[in-house]
Length: 104
Image (tube, rainbow, N blue to C red):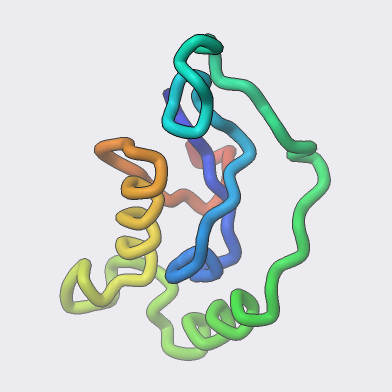
């Protein structure tokens, strides 16, 4: 299963993420309803970006650390930390943050 998560820069890091897709039979859905991934939210309407997420995005843009490639280690990369948090939340082994669905 591939889950695409769109977040405002670092708005997800340190906060509970909200996902548009869920896997039936997962910890959030009883196994007796196992089936395909279902869209549970109107993904055409975006949620407002919280002020804290906007402030963190501006901070990242001002620092030049918007990408994973210009930091000394993955432990200091907001992108890598976001990917790690998403893998922990979803239970997947890997996660790759992309700039858009078209990049996927």
